[in-house]
Image (cartoon, rainbow, N blue to C red):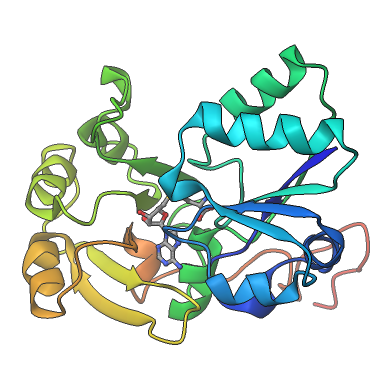
Length: 251
Ligand code: SAH
């Protein structure tokens, strides 16, 4: 049995209770060493075999899982944040399926949630935006043409941009080409929820300069949109004049 577990964004106590219990019971842990906090491995028992997938190919990962499964081992595949976002889990699950190995997935706190918490921000502000776009710039992994940042920017929703902190000049150009004002608020959140977390508040135009000034080129999320600004409307849900299923209007 293989369990894909979301490790959370960084802080060791932001893994789920279920994820932690699985780590404690695991005979084999394969963790994404480039981003998972290694302190999480302290939850494993002494006899647990630990592998760092940053040094392995997909085939090697599957081979460790297969060998472990044949001998009845409990295997945890530990992915940063939530495994469903840029986790490359589908290809692993499909290979397990082909081999008749059972698996399940435990969600985790994604870094886009960790980053919003660090900023004390809300992505979905009434009359500002009710949509969050999770995306990335093209890197070695191509992004479909219809999902270019400029196309997404045209929607003017709140955006959380992963895997892109080394290409910020290009990112700013795409965002403004899509229709964002150059002074639209933006933030760079480096290692959200880790002890060395850094928050840089800036705007779209100044993204690259702000990252350079703060020595940030990786492990950061770029957040963009007027949800980082001052203006918004009050929610209807808590409006005294608004009746809903659980509360009668008082005014
Ligand atoms: N599955 C992960 C994302 C993996 S892709 C999740 O749900 O968060 C790796 C990218 O995620 C990094 O390039 C960075 O953009 C972002 N990232 C991961 N952890 C982060 C953190 N603690 N703070 C800021 N960005 C982070």
